[in-house]
Image (cartoon, rainbow, N blue to C red; front, side, top):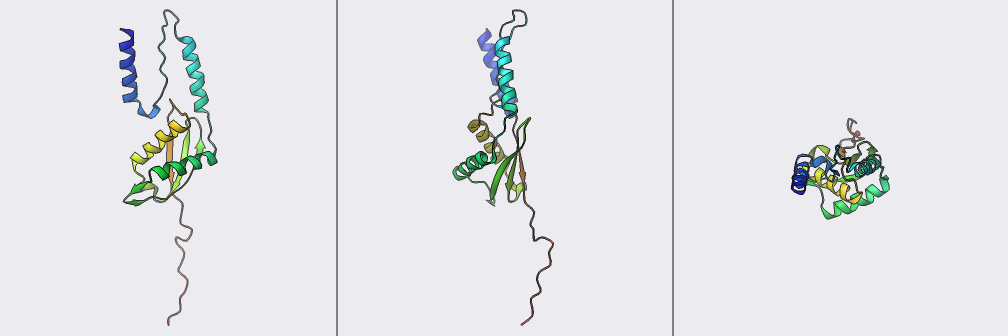
Length: 148
């Protein structure tokens, strides 16, 4: 049963490859040459998504609305400052925040899934790299305060 086999394959793919959620699986027949046109269309579309770039302004407007709906909390609230796309192939995003080591994995998945849904990034892996900013005053000596 072709349809049953395809549905089982789609379910297995969704379960085993969550990092590329929404990937287009195209059944082809090498013997009959069926499905090759759809396969090439899917390859071209995936390549277009793979090379896409999202402006920092769009990302930050999106990030503001996402944080408003679901703030990042790990013990105490994390301050997320901005997000920018650092690279393509696959898309990599830098998330500037306070205490990047405390960003929960679940929140990172939430951001990834929301990025995928909002910007139509189906079928490709998305990498989010949390980064903290260095304290410009760390290592400085305290100013001299005269005794009273």
